[in-house]
Length: 89
Image (cartoon, rainbow, N blue to C red):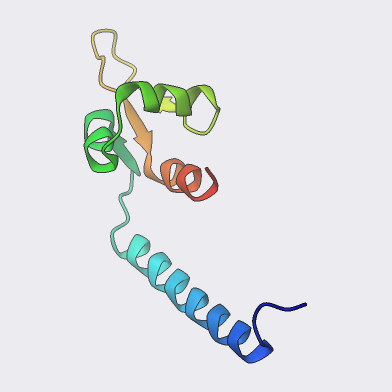
């Protein structure tokens, strides 16, 4: 038993396809060559706690990046990793 008619399904798929194309175009237009976001900014933008971010790291969905300087404690994440994690998670 189908929940949607074939016409409604095609229309819905068309809408999803257009939205996805818009998202890809937006990401390409706003591409950051390094693709990194600082930990503090990510916490603020997603309105999550440090513990939540650590849990996501433990799940293997996010990898943290640190500059190769001994005194640096700044942590970054790849934006594309965050997008992928949020899309799947």
